[in-house]
Length: 510
Image 1 (tube, rainbow, N blue to C red):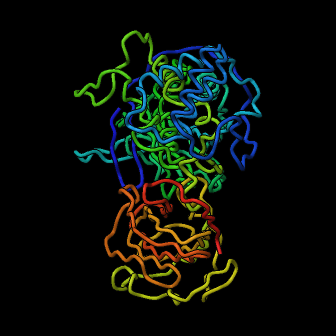
Image 2 (cartoon, rainbow, N blue to C red):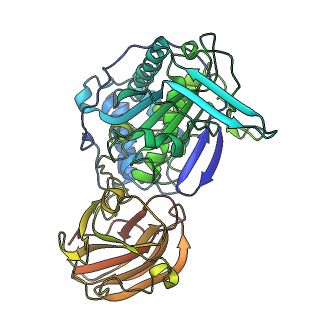
């Protein structure tokens, strides 16, 4: 695979396929709504002592209580900060895999998490273009009804693999819509900017990922025509301004889609989306358990990808290793982009804001940063109150990033917006404020300007970290932001000076 970083997205390109496997089906496809992730019985949402968990895991394992042992080993990843002197991570990963083989998988769908997929297949790809020599070209490929059914079988088998490999802790909840309007524009794959306008039924936050299938080469059932250029078999990007809160996965389908019905390609691409969600929504730290490929075989410089580990007969063995040794059951139960999650890494984040905007800042100095669209030191936001034609609204954070598109609508350049929250502290204490943004930023605390930056930063940059002092009682924060690229993007957390959770601080949206 090739990793390309772009503003507000990561594209991961697949350069090969593998095997075909028949699977059992754990559940039918459905579009049942999900508003909150499943609970995580036995796993704490507050930081724990890693050595206490390690000793408890060893004691339970020696006693033959493998379920309890696995829970404590998983707690080390889910609920502790591991010091450098801590026992080998490789050993801990191995323990996850060994013990999962000894405990009974979950069989109750109600106890599993749910990842919502909206799948779309274009019945017809019909593209006309002029080549570099000025010659008119035309390519048309049509899915037959059996081929559409095979795509559904692929989705079913993909869902079965996720259920199996996650030990019964995550269900893929999916449905597929066939788009009869032809796909008429082509950029090497079913490109997000081209395809998303077709999906008029999709609401923001309705799906954790969107799967898009386009037939990009002809088979014996198609009339002879020109060929389309392929950039990839499948590609995955994170949430962008166009994807309505979902990760986006596009697939080029070959001349005979029925040749591969295992769901492996879907699984491969989806694991990239899962990793993005763990990092960017669930706030698991880089280099921790979501750094899946750290021990996963030798790196191949020529192709820029990880080789399959020695002894693994197929790539499916590699995926099983990722699920079983490099992730915990809680990670799968709580995996979501749009559902509300709770884990120790999310606890310091502000999860609800009062939001106002966007204001038009076109032509204003410093992107509108110098223009007071409200009485910035004195404003007291209240949900429902208006300033001009704009109204203060509630903005929630399913994970660490605020979900702002439902509040502000379609993004645009030259915009300024405000976010507000209150941190109630039971004591005066020093703190660190960490914020990630897309654009420029100013922050007021109790009416005093504590931070001002006229430097545009992209959301994927490392957070700014500010020293602040929390007063006892209410600390009112107002954040002023601009937008420069991609989606509306902002996250903020407060920690103690060591980067850990502040004691007895409660966040509210005024």
